[in-house]
Length: 220
Image 1 (cartoon, rainbow, N blue to C red):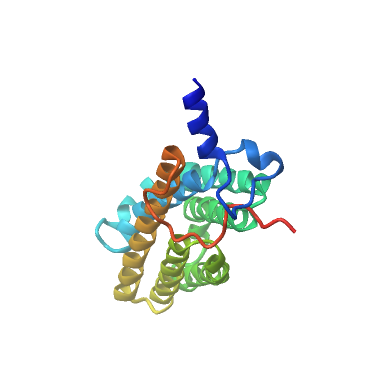
Image 2: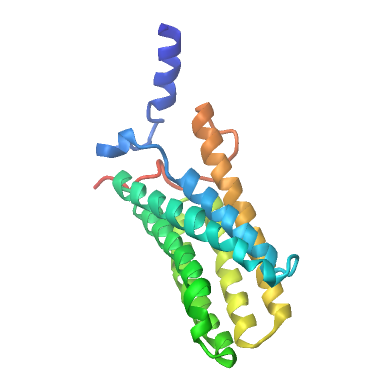
């Protein structure tokens, strides 16, 4: 028992130079693992349609994923990140959870209210503003990790290409945006797996290129 306790103590003890989690963060697991898992899975499924590998008639299969996993689960991850004192993760997961819920609502209820000849411009606007948000989140991610940075870099490009494809009615551009969507999802899955596996084994097995001591805001 003493040996097992010693191993657990080494796993939970802060590394040299790392910040010790404060307050409720000490009792809450890292929400990035499930947040990125929900984001990655839903994004990959939609990316298969965006890239043209699956017909757009299959789009309704994305709706339950967008509402439940990419949406509600990721929103919860953002709320847990707020409690942990991680502003970056809280803003990111809460916002992308909101994106997927809005994506579900847009396609299920509101898109049909827009005249067909205006839907391309409307969707381009929708994708563009999310691209702008992702861009400034990408700038902040230089202080987080290279893994997260790559997720947001490819996502920024994906939003831009998808918006351009809708605005210019160019399926070629839209499909290239879909390829970046798949790249984003794949990297997000890797980061989720790295967080899960590294925490479970108590050591770094899958590197992320961390840029900060712990996934929590720096103490003043």
